[in-house]
Length: 369
Image (cartoon, rainbow, N blue to C red; front, side):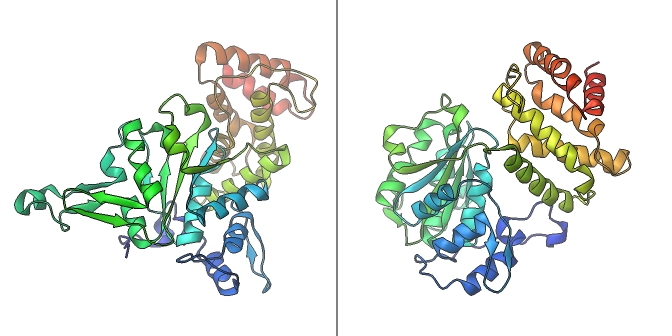
């Protein structure tokens, strides 16, 4: 069985794994979940979807939503994991792909840590297996010298493995997944052995819509995945809710002030991001130029969290416009040459005339000097 190394007390951990942070909710769901469960699943598909989307259990236990979006997207993702198809979560940056991946693994397997982080330098060993070279040189190839990858461990234990940023991994390393996903086996030719996946094994991969040209998936590999596209939040209210929830969670882990005093600034940050992202103001009356950055929900969360820290350590603890505008400008100005002009035009053409935004306009103008 897979074992996890010892960790500091939960109060000392900067960011707990999903299965630890929401252990009480997972336990409550498991206790009241009387629906059929696929083999080695901790919860039924219905309970996994409830864990992600939130709800109230018959005994009154409130399950907090981990993902705010269309229910059908979550249902399709969960159902895919109960089949022989792997799951590919696709979307632009900041659409909660990693977040959803982690929580799916936590709910299904109780372990979200079987993770391969995709980069341009990810080697084949990270997907298949490597070797303990001291033992290899001393005794030659053996089971004791073999170092299993997270995917190999998931296959052996019937758990969910995760691959982040699949399209950033070199194409030849990507294709090492084909046999794993199609034959559900991982050959070990050096030993004349193989690891066969047991029931419960599956794989969740994430990929960025904007990285399609980095290392495009081969058609053979793409056929092994069921692709679920995670959209950007559909409305201002939905995005404000997402940012508020995540900032609240992050703030508690960092001992930052509570959010009620900063609710208006969250709404304003999200409004600015959505307008610049969509190229039009929320009332539909004014077109604006779109900067080069993604201005994602994740970036809005980062901007507000940083502003909250500024307010806590260098202000009076209340989130104000002056605490967030530098972060907003930093998110917008990815290409200093073109984005600066776009930002200044937006500040002077939209924020200057907006009722109730004078403090935000002044802070934005002063920050640009």
